Length: 218
Ligand code: BG6
Ligand code: MG
Image (cartoon, rainbow, N blue to C red; front, side, top):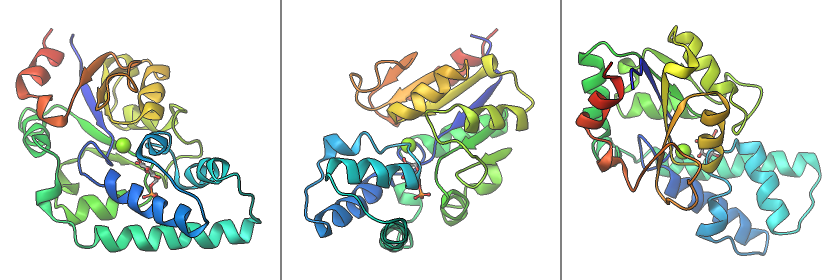
C-alpha cells in the first residue's frame, strides 16, 4: 500500500487506559444518580474530556452550570489519575511495544494522535515517549475528534502526506477523523461499532509486524 507514516491513538490502542476512563466516568454518573453502561461508553471513546462530559450529562438528562461542570470534570481527572499513577509497562497493549520498536528500527516515522491531555505523562510513565517522532495530544488541538485536526497536525509534523498515513484507533470518533483526513484507518475492537474503518482488527495482537510490512510495501 506504500504507506509512509503511522499515527497512533493512545487510550485503548497503546495502553489499556480506556477501562480507567470508563470507571471514572461511571463513578461520576453514579454520583449524579444515573447508570452508565459500557455500550454508552463507546460514545465517549476518543472524545475530549469536555465533550465527554456533555455526552454523559445528556445521557443522564442533567443540566449543570459551567462552574459545576468544571468542578466535576476536575474530579473525574483526579480519580482517573489515581488509576494511571499505578500503571506500568505491563499495561501496554499486546504487541504494541514490538510494533513501535519495529517502526523505530526501520526509520518509519510515527506520531501520537490522542485527544488526551494526560498523554505525555502516560507515555513518560510507560517509558515510550522517546520513541515517538512527534506527539500531538489534547493540548495541541482546538477541535476534538471526529474533527481530523489532530491527525492532520501529526502528518504535518511527520512531513507526510495525509494519504500516506495509517491511523490506528479504537474509537468511532477516531476512525471517522482518520477517514475525513484521507488516511488509512485501522479500527481495533468491535467490528460493528468500527465498521467505517478501512481495516478491522479484534485486538492489538492482530496488528503484526507482517501487517506493518505489507502496509509500507511499494
Ligand atoms: C481519549 C479517550 O483518548 O482522551 C477519552 O479515548 C478521553 O476517553 C479523552 O476522554 C480525553 O482524555 P483526558 O486524559 O484528557 O481526560
Ligand atoms: Mg482511544
